[in-house]
Length: 340
Image 1 (cartoon, one colour):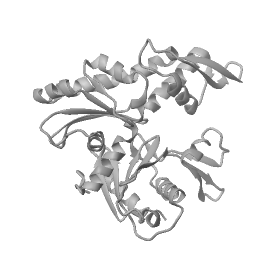
Image 2 (cartoon, rainbow, N blue to C red):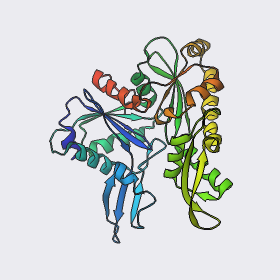
Image 3 (cartoon, rainbow, N blue to C red):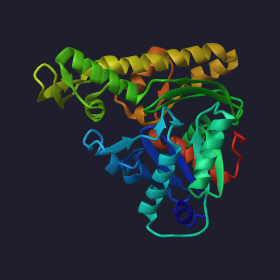
Image 4 (cartoon, helix red, strand yellow):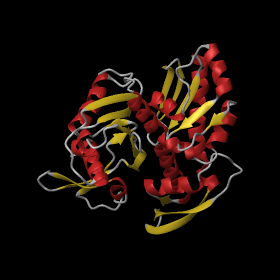
């Protein structure tokens, strides 16, 4: 059905499959989908699996589903870990949005990590072709992010893009349309949330869910010491076993957030040491561009600039720059940097 649905969109579709969220950009219409990359699956006693929900509906089931229902994230740290579930996710997502059947598959551009192996690239391509795409273009995330921001990456000038996502982050230096230096870091929103869970459990004996940690981070998380806020975290008080609500302030979350900022700053400075001096000089002038869903975090721009000594810019809608860059590549007809 994915083939049937997307055939209506002759201009093509760009997709950013994130660990936490999937974004879909229809060329000529913009970003029309931004939904959690989550699938709820029911498995009966014979082992047969049936999709119950996808996206936000599935995400609401996390931590609340019975034993025969699994809530799955088919993408982990930017890598597809369950191709079958992902295919079902793509099919049902598109059918839900367009609510009609058509018969010509679309051209699809997909954001993929830099340095993707041939085997991983074939797996991505085959998954989308099985879902109905007639042509699949693989676009490296650093290039897509830079194009989506509007950086003149084809010029002889260095640019640094830091993509901060849920499962991982990356630091990239680009010049003359190529990726000169790249580092992927296993830090992001998920690692911050895990550290928040550990901290509240250690300091207050309160066990909260990943969803609860994320909600607290979004509500009052900040990387700057002079910014304050207060929210409530709800979970199980381990010493008594009873439900409990705890008042959480910004300073309670600052340690895990600063660990993220320090990791990004260290990677950025290491990258500057590895690139040619002229590119480093360019970046000292052009600064760092933040992309990804975590770029919205309060104080991240200022804290990262303070730690690196570089200007830091957050574009409008940083979570959408990768998928917008993929759409621009698809619209322009420029081939993917990756040939599988």
